[in-house]
Length: 256
Image (cartoon, rainbow, N blue to C red; front, side, top):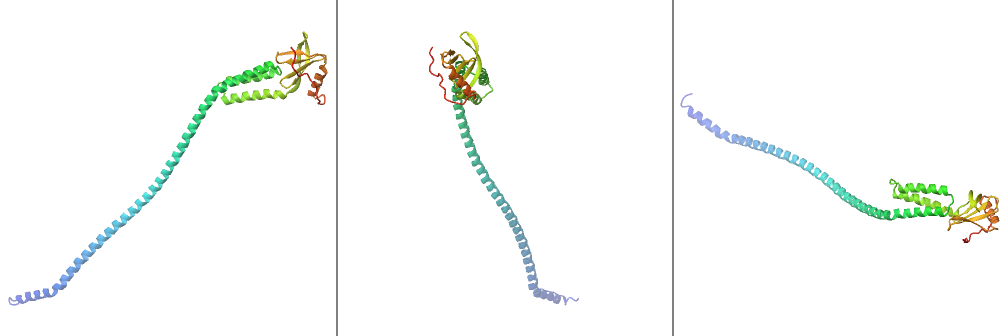
C-alpha cells in the first residue's frame, strides 16, 4: 500500500470504530450487568441457603426447648409429688415415734400388771384346788412365756389373757371326779361335785358322809347329817344319770 493510501485507511478504521462503539459499549455493559446479576443471584442463593440452615437450626432448637420445657414440667411435678411424699413419711415417722413412746410407757405399766395377774391366778389355784395338775401345767407354760426374752409383749399378753379366760370359764363348770380325802382321820374315796369356781362338795363312796370345801380356810369341812341325799342327787344330774331338777344344796356361809 502506498503512503498516500494510509491516512485513508486509518480514517476508515477510526470511523468504523466510532460507528461500532455504541454496540461494543452496550455489549460490554451487558456483560458487566450479567456478571453482577450472576453474582447477585449467587449471593442470594448463599443467603437463602444460610436462611434455610438457620431456620432448620431454629426449628431444632425450638423442638429441644419444647422437650426441655416438657421435661422441666415433669421434673417440677415429680419434685412436688416427692415433697408431699416426704412430708407424709415424716408425719408417719413422727406418729410412729409417738406410738413407740406411748407403747414404751404402756410397757412399763403392763409388765408389772401382768405379773400381778399371774400371781392372782396362782392364788386362785391355791384357794380353789380343783383340776390342780391341769391348771398348774397351764401356769407353768404361762410362766415360761412371761420369762422368755424372745417373746414380744403382745404375745405375752395374749397368753396371759388366754389363761384368764380359761379360769373365768370355770365359773360355769359343773363336773364330778373321784379323789381320796382324809375324813375323820381316815383316807376315804369320795366323789367331788364341782359347781362353778366357788362351790365343791364331796360324798363318800358309801354315801354316808358329805362335806364342802371351805375356800376361806382352804380345807374340807364335813356337813351335818341330812345333806347326803341332795349332794348325791346333784352328782347324778351332772353325770346325766338323772333328769335335771332343782336341788337344795348347802351353799351358805360355813361355820368354823
